[in-house]
Length: 130
Image (cartoon, rainbow, N blue to C red; front, side, top):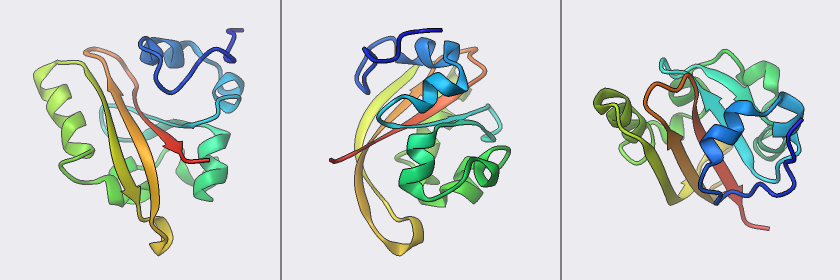
């Protein structure tokens, strides 16, 4: 088991750490984690994000991220960056200010977009203001 207490939203090697974390370790983080495969299907989803978004893991896992789970991210700012990184076999590590519009209630967040060439899982991390 890894020590998740020292992990933060801004850690430089976070993608590699997340890949090694168990589901319980992901659940101990204080920011949202959505992991998805090259086809955009959600494969990992932590309890922080589940509670904050009001969407159960059962409803999210196995579903397309950008068309079913979070269509508000299906744009040039988020989804297109992942597509470009995959097509060009380049790394992606961007932090952007964003407004989630789930259920018509706008929520200001910071998103961190993480992808590594050849990695099975890509991540959208969600940091909400406290």
